[in-house]
Length: 219
Image (cartoon, rainbow, N blue to C red):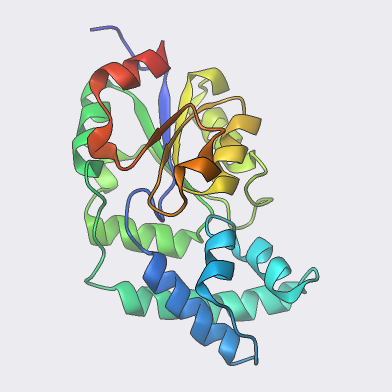
């Protein structure tokens, strides 16, 4: 088989590796309600995939102060981890492809907008640390669709962006991947296919990904 050590797969986490939407919605809902702010599911879905600073800017309708981001994020993320503990479930096809990419020698990273505490927590809960060469949080970077988190991973691996494939579920994530000059596989776990049209390949879940489809993207 061709050597793919000069390629990388960059995984989003929430909505791609693991089903977390309900737990994030509940933790945002409760955390914001403490401040008299109410968010519905439709509003929440529009922000899914962004980091907390970006989400709060949309929710507040203004740029939040740094202490506001810190305080609300601490409350929200602590609650999120409490809610999902022992309940984290990987999406169909995830374990198969994590192992397949590892077997092929493809570098793998998580490139998530989540804070490092959430990434480390969920990686531990799912017992998937062995598959990843890097865990990269975009929580302190400009949020997706800014491509910085993806470019940081490519730089870390010393892999050209055109040799990176991003796996995403969020509209902002797909946009960020394309801005980074990378190919993108999108799964329709959070958004309908029509909203993810900029992706190179759109699937219902990773069980629908064939070896042939993936190798076409690589080559």
